[in-house]
Image (cartoon, rainbow, N blue to C red; front, side):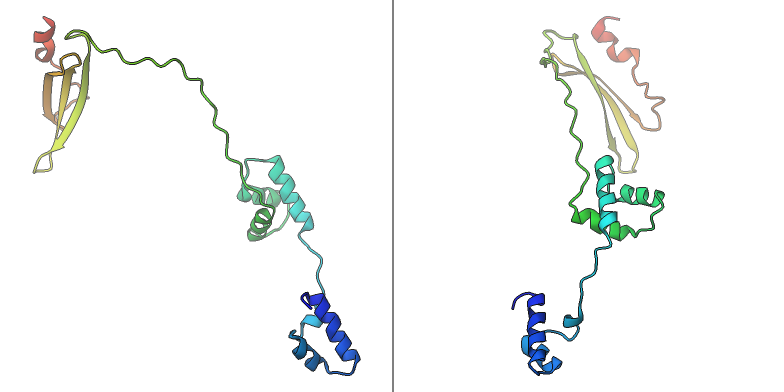
Length: 175
């Protein structure tokens, strides 16, 4: 007496023995509409098959693009219905496989052996209490870790990012 069809058979037996329909339903624990229920044919069979074929043909399309494809074919379907069928079929966009780029031989950076071989430069900034921005161009010798020059200016004074002056590095290079 677990399934609904088995309970319907019992209700019919009780009614055949002379019991009333309401009494038989109450004794078995069924609603009044349950014995009259008949299953409907699944109207989504054709649409479900079409969603699956579109999903396999266009692997990069999600449910939204498949819905648009169905609309372009002239089918008037609800987007939520397409989404439900898509989920029922456990369809999903597969993540792309990353293209592996061959890595060349990595070589460590060589440390300079003497001063003035390699310099590094950076722009650092700060703000004053009056909310003015001060930017400084710092040039550092990589061998000695010594600041070759520090050029400071307010952000409005820097023209096109040109900072270097001949005085900043001339004493070091012998210019």
